[in-house]
Amino acid sequence: MSKLYLVTGGAGFIGSHIVQRLVKRGERVRVVDNLCTGEIERLASVLSVIDFVEEDLADPAVCDRVVDGVDYVLHQAAIPSVQRSIRDPMASNRANITATLNVLESCRTHGVRRLVYAASSSVYGDTKVLPKREDMPATPLSPYALQKFVGERYAKLYFDLYKLETVSLRYFNVFGPSQDPYSEYSAVIPKFITKLLAGEKLTIFGDGEQSRDFTYVENVVQANLLALTADGAAGKMMNLGCGTRISLNQLVKQLENILGLNAQVEYLPARAGDVRDSLADIGLAERLLGYQPRVSVEDGLARTVDWFRNHASR
Ligand SMILES: NC(=O)c1ccc[n+]([C@@H]2O[C@H](COP(=O)([O-])OP(=O)(O)OC[C@H]3O[C@@H](n4cnc5c(N)ncnc54)[C@H](O)[C@@H]3O)[C@@H](O)[C@H]2O)c1
Image (cartoon, rainbow, N blue to C red; front, top):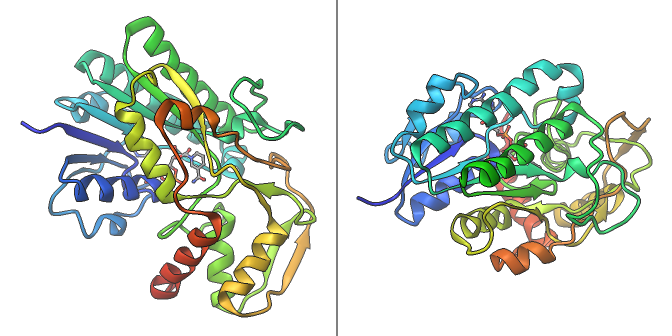
């Protein structure tokens, strides 16, 4: 029997890209998602060949059921917004910590070979030193960042205490096709693209000189698949970015060039919990996984704009 892969949060932005890649590779895939931020439409093209379970991982009995028979877990499920966690820390705690612990515990009892955990660069907080390296202290500025930190520490403990193989990837601002542009908690790139396509003005919190290591989703998929089997990666946590950064003002310029238009930008006061600058040192992922970002920010932006041109319809 071929290996079974469980993608938690597989109806989410990143999870659905992982699912599609696994299906393309001919793997057997199970998805569990309660659709709290996910959308089943993202899986429309593969729904007939995967096992889709619409359940909440905060329930340990659900975890036990969906992990049964699984070889590899890609744990993407979370409520992934800094601002939402500030407004409602209890709900995001439940999705980000309780559900993660349930998944780890079920993996332990069912003898899963390896779990890859979607950790977050937000754990670094506002460190002045760039690029951010894994040996820098965690200084979470929001419930979300703290919860993702607890998740990766639990993953490490499950390796140290129970020999469950876990690998944590600290994603840096992932973007790409199918990312939700419409929620008030949406990430900046899909939001900007859909607003520009609709001829609406953009809002930037702060002066626009804050910078991010924007990472195209295909690079993240690649790293997840490498992390499932890489020798020497078990028990490790590492950055997963592109290793380059641009400011929001530069991002707007690049989008203006791709779309061939001039953006109107409104600047509002900076928000609590947002970090100023972010850039990954990706040396550890290069060494441990053989990871190399194959898609640059420029190419990723062009592909993402293309996708939204063809799909944005709300
Ligand atoms: N997008 C980024 O830039 C970024 C950066 C750092 C880390 N991450 C992490 O990557 C992962 C995926 O993020 P995304 O951007 O695809 O977000 P997303 O919101 O699109 O996907 C998360 C998915 O998890 C599901 N989910 C949430 N709680 C659940 C629960 N209790 N039970 C079952 N399913 C549940 C949601 O319905 C959704 O489909 C998250 O763990 C997030 O913290 C993302």
